[in-house]
Image (cartoon, rainbow, N blue to C red; front, side, top):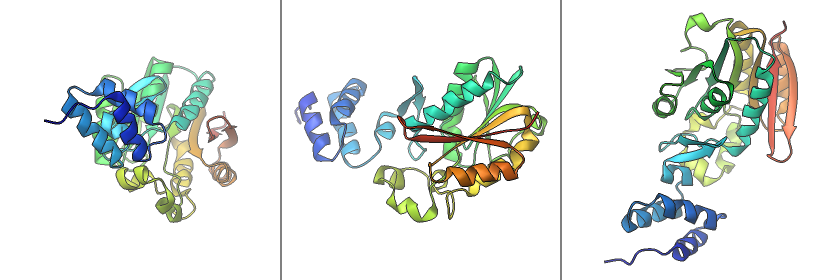
Amino acid sequence: MTSPLSPASVVTRLRAAGCVFAEDEARLLVSAARTPDHLTAMVERRASGLPLEHVLGWAEFCGLRVAVDAGVFVPRRRTEFLVRRAVALASEVSRPLVVVDLCCGSGAVGLALATELAPVELHAADVDPAAVRCARRNLAGTGHVHEGDLYEPLPAELRGRVGVLAANVPYVPTGEVALLPAEAREHEARVALDGGADGLDLVRRAAAEAPAWLIPGGHLLVETSERQAPLAAAAFDDAGLLPRVVTSEEEHATVVTGTRPS
């Protein structure tokens, strides 16, 4: 019978596998393990390259524990900046507030916004069936989750009623997907990563259709890289939205917002 792994041996195994935050990850794995064998299995899955969040089955996002199933996009900490920007802008929007989370993945952004802005009417959508199943678990009792491409699955009665539209669309250029860390490249759906030739295909599509869904004074928010932001802002302007680029140096995050003129 194999001896139980000690916390120190877990750290050693994770370090040997190249985990940069081995001590922090070890604490999470040890606390989540139901039995010594379960701990051993989790450590080996993590050491093999599976994202920590997929091993644990959850990710922390905006202080919330969000379920993340295998293959589903792991919510990034930098995207918390998008949530904070959306919360700030929501104060300018009339109530009752309708919030939409496009390309929702696990539903983390929608869940965080619903928690911060309650009461809201929340709708989320994603094209990936695995993400939709995961989001329905996270948003059960909180919002409605629809399966389909961008706005296509949203109820028609939402047109002209949305106050905050968070579209965390993929923005990695196709040619750079192969350069992503293996955790993302091998374990997350490509549709959640690949944003087309310059990474902005979905950004442009989200911007072009947003005015039909937003209320006057409503806001569209997307995350991009800093170098993509000028082109994203131009796409917002072309769509008739008033663009603004905001960057957080601390979180290495850039958010482009577009406001439908009042």
